[in-house]
Image (cartoon, rainbow, N blue to C red; front, top):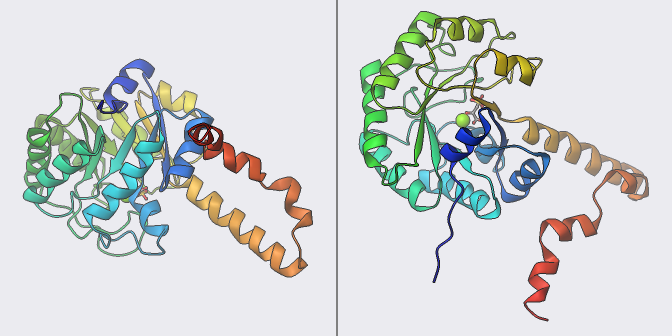
Length: 286
Ligand code: SPV
Ligand code: MG
């Protein structure tokens, strides 16, 4: 029996130079992002937990996040980059996480330097970080735990999120690079990209940089590329669009007592069948 070869994020990044990722929480959303042209899917901890109406606060288990990422990966021809939060605990949890995600065909993961249990970056509450050396150790453990050279580990600093400033973010990212990270992610919740530009001005380009333009959505992809960024994550726009669309659809049907006026705006059943690859499946019965 042949085993499926999963698409490698490292290879995709090498091919494309700049990788654009869309956040998703299930196979359907992930396939729609692939259809739009994205190079990879971000299995977002915010989305995966929100899909169960739970906070993004280390409540779900590693296995639940893994199941979500693996379900998406099975449906895709592009790689999933799994948002693995803090690695779900300490160094031993990180090692187990890498073994499990890699075995499930996930070729890239992201670990962040917050303390476990962590809270979503935009939530009010404790955003405190591990000591630099402690998190660098997690990165070393993650890299030592991978079995394929392809496996890609992104080290994410939340220094700006926790109010520590650009110098601290830079010094942490250098330590994470020394520890063996394949890329670094710099996150900011400021309403402009200025903090990120300051970071990029101080970064020597020794590793690819990942950004998440959620609170500075006007940063155009051409300018992001020109600034020297390698990976851009549109982490939650799909989730937010889904909420808006479902809310107005359900309200409209309930208030109007029928759904005729919606028909021209919603996907046909035929489109759903196409996403399910219904015709391919039915050939099995032919
Ligand atoms: C996620 O999508 O879960 C992220 C990005 O980690 S953020 O929500 O901005 O923290
Ligand atoms: Mg997350």
